[in-house]
Image (tube, rainbow over all chains, first blue to last red; front, side):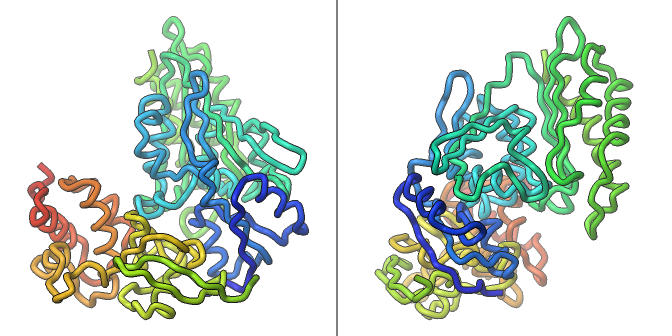
Length: 289
Length: 166
Protein backbone atom coordinates (compact mmCIF):
# COMPACT_ATOMS: atom_id res chain seq x y z
CA UNK A 1 0.00 0.00 0.00
CA UNK A 2 2.85 2.40 -0.76
CA UNK A 3 3.34 3.91 -4.22
CA UNK A 4 6.12 2.71 -6.49
CA UNK A 5 8.85 5.28 -7.14
CA UNK A 6 8.07 8.20 -9.41
CA UNK A 7 9.45 11.60 -10.29
CA UNK A 8 7.47 14.63 -9.29
CA UNK A 9 7.18 18.04 -10.88
CA UNK A 10 5.02 20.95 -9.82
CA UNK A 11 5.12 23.32 -12.80
CA UNK A 12 4.49 26.97 -12.10
CA UNK A 13 2.07 27.49 -14.96
CA UNK A 14 -0.34 25.62 -17.19
CA UNK A 15 1.90 26.26 -20.20
CA UNK A 16 4.86 24.73 -18.34
CA UNK A 17 2.74 21.70 -17.42
CA UNK A 18 1.75 21.14 -21.06
CA UNK A 19 5.42 21.39 -22.13
CA UNK A 20 6.41 18.82 -19.50
CA UNK A 21 3.70 16.42 -20.66
CA UNK A 22 4.68 16.92 -24.31
CA UNK A 23 8.30 16.05 -23.45
CA UNK A 24 7.26 12.83 -21.70
CA UNK A 25 6.54 9.65 -23.59
CA UNK A 26 3.02 8.31 -23.80
CA UNK A 27 1.88 6.67 -20.53
CA UNK A 28 5.03 7.86 -18.74
CA UNK A 29 3.48 10.88 -17.07
CA UNK A 30 0.25 11.33 -15.15
CA UNK A 31 -1.42 14.56 -14.18
CA UNK A 32 -2.05 14.91 -10.45
CA UNK A 33 -5.06 17.09 -9.65
CA UNK A 34 -6.76 16.78 -6.24
CA UNK A 35 -5.48 13.23 -5.92
CA UNK A 36 -8.66 11.74 -4.49
CA UNK A 37 -8.80 9.10 -7.24
CA UNK A 38 -5.19 8.97 -8.46
CA UNK A 39 -3.57 8.68 -5.02
CA UNK A 40 -5.51 5.49 -4.11
CA UNK A 41 -4.47 4.03 -7.49
CA UNK A 42 -0.83 4.94 -6.76
CA UNK A 43 -0.98 3.60 -3.21
CA UNK A 44 -2.38 0.31 -4.49
CA UNK A 45 0.14 0.35 -7.38
CA UNK A 46 -2.67 0.07 -9.91
CA UNK A 47 -1.06 3.12 -11.51
CA UNK A 48 2.73 3.24 -11.87
CA UNK A 49 3.65 6.43 -13.75
CA UNK A 50 7.27 7.52 -14.07
CA UNK A 51 6.38 11.15 -13.58
CA UNK A 52 3.61 12.97 -11.75
CA UNK A 53 2.84 16.44 -13.05
CA UNK A 54 1.13 18.19 -10.16
CA UNK A 55 -1.25 20.90 -11.34
CA UNK A 56 -3.24 21.09 -8.09
CA UNK A 57 -1.42 24.23 -6.98
CA UNK A 58 -2.02 26.24 -10.15
CA UNK A 59 -3.96 29.29 -9.00
CA UNK A 60 -4.71 30.17 -12.64
CA UNK A 61 -6.99 27.10 -12.79
CA UNK A 62 -8.88 27.87 -9.59
CA UNK A 63 -11.85 30.15 -10.26
CA UNK A 64 -15.62 30.33 -10.70
CA UNK A 65 -16.54 33.07 -13.17
CA UNK A 66 -19.72 34.24 -14.78
CA UNK A 67 -19.48 33.83 -18.51
CA UNK A 68 -22.50 35.31 -20.19
CA UNK A 69 -25.39 33.65 -18.41
CA UNK A 70 -23.34 30.54 -17.66
CA UNK A 71 -20.35 29.74 -15.50
CA UNK A 72 -16.72 29.13 -16.40
CA UNK A 73 -15.07 26.98 -13.77
CA UNK A 74 -11.32 26.46 -13.54
CA UNK A 75 -10.37 22.79 -13.59
CA UNK A 76 -8.57 22.95 -10.23
CA UNK A 77 -11.56 24.43 -8.42
CA UNK A 78 -12.31 22.12 -5.50
CA UNK A 79 -15.67 20.51 -4.96
CA UNK A 80 -15.75 22.27 -1.61
CA UNK A 81 -15.42 25.66 -3.29
CA UNK A 82 -18.25 24.72 -5.67
CA UNK A 83 -20.38 23.49 -2.76
CA UNK A 84 -19.88 26.77 -0.90
CA UNK A 85 -20.21 29.12 -3.88
CA UNK A 86 -23.32 31.29 -3.77
CA UNK A 87 -23.00 31.75 -7.52
CA UNK A 88 -23.22 27.99 -8.06
CA UNK A 89 -26.13 27.61 -5.62
CA UNK A 90 -28.08 30.36 -7.33
CA UNK A 91 -27.17 29.81 -10.98
CA UNK A 92 -26.41 26.09 -11.19
CA UNK A 93 -28.65 24.28 -8.70
CA UNK A 94 -28.16 20.92 -10.45
CA UNK A 95 -24.37 21.24 -10.18
CA UNK A 96 -24.72 22.16 -6.51
CA UNK A 97 -27.03 19.22 -5.80
CA UNK A 98 -24.59 16.83 -7.46
CA UNK A 99 -21.59 18.28 -5.62
CA UNK A 100 -22.89 17.60 -2.12
CA UNK A 101 -23.42 13.94 -3.07
CA UNK A 102 -19.70 13.50 -3.80
CA UNK A 103 -17.81 11.89 -0.93
CA UNK A 104 -17.58 13.94 2.26
CA UNK A 105 -16.26 17.41 3.09
CA UNK A 106 -12.89 15.78 3.82
CA UNK A 107 -12.77 14.53 0.20
CA UNK A 108 -14.38 17.62 -1.37
CA UNK A 109 -11.68 19.78 0.25
CA UNK A 110 -9.11 18.30 -2.17
CA UNK A 111 -11.07 16.78 -5.06
CA UNK A 112 -11.44 19.03 -8.10
CA UNK A 113 -14.03 19.36 -10.85
CA UNK A 114 -11.37 18.92 -13.53
CA UNK A 115 -9.95 15.84 -11.85
CA UNK A 116 -13.37 14.17 -11.77
CA UNK A 117 -14.11 15.01 -15.39
CA UNK A 118 -10.72 13.74 -16.60
CA UNK A 119 -10.92 10.60 -14.45
CA UNK A 120 -14.28 9.79 -16.13
CA UNK A 121 -15.43 7.20 -13.63
CA UNK A 122 -18.72 5.84 -15.00
CA UNK A 123 -20.36 6.14 -11.57
CA UNK A 124 -19.13 9.69 -10.88
CA UNK A 125 -21.51 12.63 -10.61
CA UNK A 126 -19.71 15.36 -12.57
CA UNK A 127 -19.62 13.68 -15.99
CA UNK A 128 -23.39 13.22 -15.67
CA UNK A 129 -23.78 16.89 -14.78
CA UNK A 130 -21.66 17.85 -17.81
CA UNK A 131 -23.85 15.79 -20.13
CA UNK A 132 -27.14 16.96 -18.63
CA UNK A 133 -26.07 20.61 -18.70
CA UNK A 134 -24.51 20.38 -22.18
CA UNK A 135 -21.21 21.61 -20.75
CA UNK A 136 -18.07 22.25 -22.74
CA UNK A 137 -14.62 21.16 -21.63
CA UNK A 138 -11.71 23.42 -22.49
CA UNK A 139 -8.44 21.65 -23.05
CA UNK A 140 -4.89 23.01 -23.42
CA UNK A 141 -2.32 21.12 -25.43
CA UNK A 142 0.93 21.66 -27.32
CA UNK A 143 -1.08 22.97 -30.30
CA UNK A 144 -3.11 25.40 -28.23
CA UNK A 145 -6.64 25.32 -26.90
CA UNK A 146 -9.64 23.29 -27.99
CA UNK A 147 -13.15 23.07 -26.72
CA UNK A 148 -14.88 19.68 -26.49
CA UNK A 149 -18.60 19.11 -25.98
CA UNK A 150 -19.39 16.84 -23.02
CA UNK A 151 -21.03 14.31 -25.34
CA UNK A 152 -17.72 13.94 -27.21
CA UNK A 153 -15.44 14.15 -24.16
CA UNK A 154 -16.42 11.00 -22.29
CA UNK A 155 -15.40 8.04 -24.43
CA UNK A 156 -15.65 4.96 -22.25
CA UNK A 157 -14.66 3.62 -18.83
CA UNK A 158 -11.97 5.97 -17.38
CA UNK A 159 -11.26 7.26 -20.89
CA UNK A 160 -11.79 10.73 -22.31
CA UNK A 161 -10.98 12.55 -25.55
CA UNK A 162 -7.91 14.08 -23.86
CA UNK A 163 -4.66 13.47 -25.78
CA UNK A 164 -1.62 12.45 -23.71
CA UNK A 165 -0.12 15.96 -23.65
CA UNK A 166 -3.42 17.76 -23.07
CA UNK A 167 -4.71 19.16 -19.80
CA UNK A 168 -8.31 19.99 -19.01
CA UNK A 169 -8.27 23.65 -17.99
CA UNK A 170 -11.89 24.80 -17.71
CA UNK A 171 -15.44 23.53 -17.56
CA UNK A 172 -18.06 25.79 -19.14
CA UNK A 173 -21.55 25.20 -17.89
CA UNK A 174 -24.29 27.04 -19.77
CA UNK A 175 -27.19 28.60 -17.98
CA UNK A 176 -30.26 26.50 -17.32
CA UNK A 177 -32.91 28.24 -19.52
CA UNK A 178 -35.60 30.10 -17.57
CA UNK A 179 -38.36 27.84 -16.33
CA UNK A 180 -36.29 24.67 -16.66
CA UNK A 181 -36.92 22.10 -13.95
CA UNK A 182 -34.10 19.79 -12.87
CA UNK A 183 -33.42 16.75 -10.75
CA UNK A 184 -30.27 14.97 -9.62
CA UNK A 185 -30.75 11.68 -7.80
CA UNK A 186 -28.60 8.70 -6.98
CA UNK A 187 -28.64 5.54 -4.93
CA UNK A 188 -25.49 4.71 -2.98
CA UNK A 189 -24.94 2.04 -0.33
CA UNK A 190 -23.89 4.72 2.14
CA UNK A 191 -23.94 8.50 1.88
CA UNK A 192 -20.75 9.60 0.17
CA UNK A 193 -20.05 6.32 -1.63
CA UNK A 194 -19.89 6.12 -5.39
CA UNK A 195 -23.41 5.77 -6.74
CA UNK A 196 -24.72 2.33 -7.64
CA UNK A 197 -26.80 4.24 -10.17
CA UNK A 198 -28.04 7.79 -10.65
CA UNK A 199 -30.03 10.05 -12.95
CA UNK A 200 -29.84 13.71 -13.93
CA UNK A 201 -32.91 15.21 -15.61
CA UNK A 202 -33.81 18.63 -16.99
CA UNK A 203 -36.99 19.64 -18.78
CA UNK A 204 -39.20 22.65 -19.56
CA UNK A 205 -42.95 22.92 -19.80
CA UNK A 206 -44.36 24.60 -22.90
CA UNK A 207 -48.10 25.19 -22.93
CA UNK A 208 -48.46 22.38 -20.39
CA UNK A 209 -46.31 19.91 -22.31
CA UNK A 210 -42.76 18.68 -21.69
CA UNK A 211 -40.04 20.17 -23.88
CA UNK A 212 -36.25 20.00 -24.23
CA UNK A 213 -36.09 16.97 -21.94
CA UNK A 214 -32.61 15.70 -21.16
CA UNK A 215 -32.15 12.41 -19.32
CA UNK A 216 -28.71 11.21 -18.25
CA UNK A 217 -28.08 8.06 -16.23
CA UNK A 218 -24.78 7.11 -14.62
CA UNK A 219 -23.33 4.08 -12.89
CA UNK A 220 -25.09 1.80 -15.36
CA UNK A 221 -22.78 1.87 -18.38
CA UNK A 222 -19.16 2.43 -19.37
CA UNK A 223 -19.81 6.17 -18.98
CA UNK A 224 -22.67 8.51 -18.15
CA UNK A 225 -25.31 8.01 -20.83
CA UNK A 226 -27.80 10.40 -22.38
CA UNK A 227 -30.80 8.36 -23.47
CA UNK A 228 -32.53 9.93 -26.49
CA UNK A 229 -35.22 7.26 -26.78
CA UNK A 230 -36.60 8.11 -23.35
CA UNK A 231 -36.32 11.86 -23.95
CA UNK A 232 -38.26 11.61 -27.22
CA UNK A 233 -41.01 9.70 -25.51
CA UNK A 234 -41.46 12.57 -23.02
CA UNK A 235 -41.18 15.63 -25.28
CA UNK A 236 -44.51 17.01 -26.47
CA UNK A 237 -46.51 15.09 -23.89
CA UNK A 238 -48.35 16.30 -20.79
CA UNK A 239 -46.35 15.64 -17.60
CA UNK A 240 -48.20 12.74 -16.00
CA UNK A 241 -47.01 9.98 -13.71
CA UNK A 242 -48.00 7.46 -16.38
CA UNK A 243 -45.76 9.17 -18.93
CA UNK A 244 -42.79 9.25 -16.55
CA UNK A 245 -43.30 5.58 -15.73
CA UNK A 246 -43.28 4.69 -19.44
CA UNK A 247 -40.13 6.80 -19.96
CA UNK A 248 -38.35 5.00 -17.11
CA UNK A 249 -39.32 1.63 -18.53
CA UNK A 250 -38.22 2.66 -22.02
CA UNK A 251 -34.86 3.79 -20.69
CA UNK A 252 -34.29 0.56 -18.81
CA UNK A 253 -35.08 -1.40 -21.97
CA UNK A 254 -32.77 0.48 -24.33
CA UNK A 255 -29.61 0.82 -22.23
CA UNK A 256 -26.96 -1.84 -22.73
CA UNK A 257 -26.34 -4.50 -20.11
CA UNK A 258 -25.16 -2.63 -16.97
CA UNK A 259 -22.17 -3.63 -14.90
CA UNK A 260 -22.64 -6.46 -12.43
CA UNK A 261 -20.42 -6.43 -9.34
CA UNK A 262 -20.52 -7.06 -5.60
CA UNK A 263 -22.46 -3.82 -5.04
CA UNK A 264 -25.32 -4.62 -7.39
CA UNK A 265 -26.34 -7.00 -10.15
CA UNK A 266 -26.93 -5.78 -13.69
CA UNK A 267 -30.67 -6.32 -13.24
CA UNK A 268 -30.74 -4.26 -10.07
CA UNK A 269 -28.84 -1.41 -11.74
CA UNK A 270 -31.23 -1.52 -14.69
CA UNK A 271 -34.19 -1.31 -12.35
CA UNK A 272 -32.60 1.56 -10.39
CA UNK A 273 -32.10 3.44 -13.66
CA UNK A 274 -35.80 2.95 -14.43
CA UNK A 275 -37.02 4.17 -11.04
CA UNK A 276 -34.55 7.05 -10.75
CA UNK A 277 -35.51 8.26 -14.24
CA UNK A 278 -39.19 8.11 -13.39
CA UNK A 279 -38.72 9.99 -10.11
CA UNK A 280 -36.23 12.42 -11.65
CA UNK A 281 -38.71 13.34 -14.39
CA UNK A 282 -41.45 13.92 -11.83
CA UNK A 283 -39.17 16.06 -9.69
CA UNK A 284 -37.92 18.08 -12.66
CA UNK A 285 -41.49 18.63 -13.87
CA UNK A 286 -42.53 19.84 -10.41
CA UNK A 287 -39.75 22.44 -10.56
CA UNK A 288 -40.46 23.50 -14.15
CA UNK A 289 -42.72 26.33 -15.19
CA UNK B 1 14.15 13.30 -9.22
CA UNK B 2 12.85 10.22 -7.43
CA UNK B 3 15.40 11.03 -4.72
CA UNK B 4 14.41 12.41 -1.36
CA UNK B 5 14.17 16.15 -1.14
CA UNK B 6 13.90 18.64 1.66
CA UNK B 7 10.32 19.47 2.66
CA UNK B 8 9.42 22.29 5.02
CA UNK B 9 6.07 22.92 6.64
CA UNK B 10 4.56 24.38 9.75
CA UNK B 11 3.16 21.62 11.93
CA UNK B 12 1.15 22.53 15.01
CA UNK B 13 2.63 26.01 14.92
CA UNK B 14 6.26 24.91 14.74
CA UNK B 15 8.50 25.10 11.67
CA UNK B 16 9.45 21.54 10.69
CA UNK B 17 11.55 20.04 7.97
CA UNK B 18 12.52 16.61 6.82
CA UNK B 19 13.39 14.47 3.83
CA UNK B 20 10.70 12.99 1.62
CA UNK B 21 10.84 10.98 -1.56
CA UNK B 22 8.18 12.17 -4.02
CA UNK B 23 6.18 9.01 -3.32
CA UNK B 24 6.07 9.59 0.46
CA UNK B 25 2.55 10.47 1.56
CA UNK B 26 1.99 13.30 3.98
CA UNK B 27 0.76 10.71 6.52
CA UNK B 28 3.99 8.73 6.34
CA UNK B 29 6.08 11.91 6.45
CA UNK B 30 4.33 13.09 9.61
CA UNK B 31 4.69 9.70 11.26
CA UNK B 32 8.08 8.54 10.00
CA UNK B 33 10.09 11.71 9.45
CA UNK B 34 8.55 14.07 12.00
CA UNK B 35 7.73 11.25 14.46
CA UNK B 36 4.23 12.59 15.01
CA UNK B 37 2.57 9.20 15.30
CA UNK B 38 -0.76 10.54 16.53
CA UNK B 39 -1.90 10.63 12.90
CA UNK B 40 -2.83 7.04 12.19
CA UNK B 41 -2.88 5.14 8.92
CA UNK B 42 -5.66 2.73 8.04
CA UNK B 43 -6.89 1.92 4.56
CA UNK B 44 -4.43 4.14 2.68
CA UNK B 45 -6.94 4.87 -0.04
CA UNK B 46 -9.03 7.63 1.44
CA UNK B 47 -11.96 5.64 2.76
CA UNK B 48 -11.43 5.19 6.50
CA UNK B 49 -10.49 8.77 7.40
CA UNK B 50 -8.16 7.85 10.26
CA UNK B 51 -5.28 9.87 8.71
CA UNK B 52 -7.31 13.10 8.53
CA UNK B 53 -5.32 16.23 9.39
CA UNK B 54 -5.89 19.94 8.85
CA UNK B 55 -4.09 21.46 5.87
CA UNK B 56 -4.33 25.23 5.95
CA UNK B 57 -7.39 24.77 8.16
CA UNK B 58 -9.15 22.22 5.95
CA UNK B 59 -9.68 18.58 6.93
CA UNK B 60 -7.98 16.37 4.35
CA UNK B 61 -6.77 12.79 3.99
CA UNK B 62 -3.02 12.77 4.60
CA UNK B 63 -2.76 9.39 2.84
CA UNK B 64 -4.08 10.99 -0.38
CA UNK B 65 -1.52 13.75 -0.47
CA UNK B 66 2.21 13.68 -1.03
CA UNK B 67 4.54 15.24 1.52
CA UNK B 68 6.17 17.26 -1.27
CA UNK B 69 2.77 18.78 -2.04
CA UNK B 70 2.53 20.07 1.52
CA UNK B 71 5.83 21.97 1.22
CA UNK B 72 5.15 25.40 2.72
CA UNK B 73 1.76 24.43 4.12
CA UNK B 74 0.34 24.86 7.60
CA UNK B 75 -0.56 21.45 9.03
CA UNK B 76 -2.38 20.66 12.25
CA UNK B 77 -2.34 17.13 13.65
CA UNK B 78 -3.98 15.64 16.72
CA UNK B 79 -0.82 16.48 18.70
CA UNK B 80 -1.67 20.14 18.16
CA UNK B 81 -5.04 20.01 19.90
CA UNK B 82 -4.22 19.81 23.60
CA UNK B 83 -2.55 22.69 25.47
CA UNK B 84 1.21 22.39 26.07
CA UNK B 85 0.45 21.58 29.73
CA UNK B 86 -1.62 18.59 28.62
CA UNK B 87 -5.06 20.16 29.11
CA UNK B 88 -7.31 18.55 26.55
CA UNK B 89 -9.03 20.48 23.75
CA UNK B 90 -12.80 20.88 24.31
CA UNK B 91 -13.48 18.39 21.50
CA UNK B 92 -11.23 15.84 23.22
CA UNK B 93 -12.92 16.52 26.57
CA UNK B 94 -16.30 15.97 24.96
CA UNK B 95 -15.13 12.64 23.50
CA UNK B 96 -14.01 11.49 26.95
CA UNK B 97 -17.25 12.56 28.64
CA UNK B 98 -19.63 11.27 25.98
CA UNK B 99 -17.82 7.98 25.33
CA UNK B 100 -16.83 9.10 21.82
CA UNK B 101 -13.99 6.60 21.74
CA UNK B 102 -13.34 3.03 22.72
CA UNK B 103 -10.14 1.55 21.26
CA UNK B 104 -9.15 5.00 20.04
CA UNK B 105 -7.53 4.03 16.76
CA UNK B 106 -9.90 6.11 14.62
CA UNK B 107 -10.15 8.99 17.10
CA UNK B 108 -7.40 11.29 15.74
CA UNK B 109 -9.16 11.40 12.37
CA UNK B 110 -12.54 12.10 13.94
CA UNK B 111 -11.10 14.88 16.09
CA UNK B 112 -9.47 16.66 13.17
CA UNK B 113 -12.53 16.36 10.91
CA UNK B 114 -14.72 17.74 13.71
CA UNK B 115 -12.23 20.57 14.28
CA UNK B 116 -12.82 21.91 10.80
CA UNK B 117 -16.58 21.40 11.09
CA UNK B 118 -16.93 23.37 14.33
CA UNK B 119 -14.51 26.05 13.15
CA UNK B 120 -16.64 26.78 10.06
CA UNK B 121 -20.02 25.92 11.58
CA UNK B 122 -20.18 26.43 15.37
CA UNK B 123 -23.76 25.11 15.67
CA UNK B 124 -24.10 22.23 13.23
CA UNK B 125 -27.29 20.24 12.80
CA UNK B 126 -27.37 16.44 13.08
CA UNK B 127 -27.39 16.24 9.29
CA UNK B 128 -24.39 18.53 8.94
CA UNK B 129 -22.48 16.53 11.54
CA UNK B 130 -23.36 13.24 9.84
CA UNK B 131 -22.09 14.54 6.49
CA UNK B 132 -18.67 14.86 8.16
CA UNK B 133 -18.83 11.74 10.36
CA UNK B 134 -19.82 9.71 7.29
CA UNK B 135 -16.28 10.24 6.07
CA UNK B 136 -14.75 8.67 9.18
CA UNK B 137 -15.05 5.01 10.07
CA UNK B 138 -15.28 3.77 13.65
CA UNK B 139 -15.68 0.03 14.22
CA UNK B 140 -16.24 -0.10 17.98
CA UNK B 141 -17.95 2.89 19.58
CA UNK B 142 -20.93 3.25 17.31
CA UNK B 143 -21.62 6.67 15.95
CA UNK B 144 -24.35 7.87 18.30
CA UNK B 145 -21.92 8.62 21.10
CA UNK B 146 -19.66 10.43 18.65
CA UNK B 147 -22.63 12.48 17.45
CA UNK B 148 -23.33 13.38 21.10
CA UNK B 149 -19.66 14.25 21.56
CA UNK B 150 -19.82 16.72 18.67
CA UNK B 151 -22.91 18.43 20.10
CA UNK B 152 -21.25 18.59 23.50
CA UNK B 153 -18.03 19.98 21.99
CA UNK B 154 -20.01 22.61 20.09
CA UNK B 155 -21.65 23.70 23.36
CA UNK B 156 -18.25 23.84 25.12
CA UNK B 157 -16.90 26.00 22.30
CA UNK B 158 -19.79 28.42 22.64
CA UNK B 159 -22.05 27.24 19.82
CA UNK B 160 -24.15 24.15 19.86
CA UNK B 161 -27.71 22.92 19.46
CA UNK B 162 -29.68 20.32 21.32
CA UNK B 163 -28.97 16.74 20.28
CA UNK B 164 -32.10 16.74 18.15
CA UNK B 165 -30.67 19.54 16.03
CA UNK B 166 -33.50 21.88 17.09
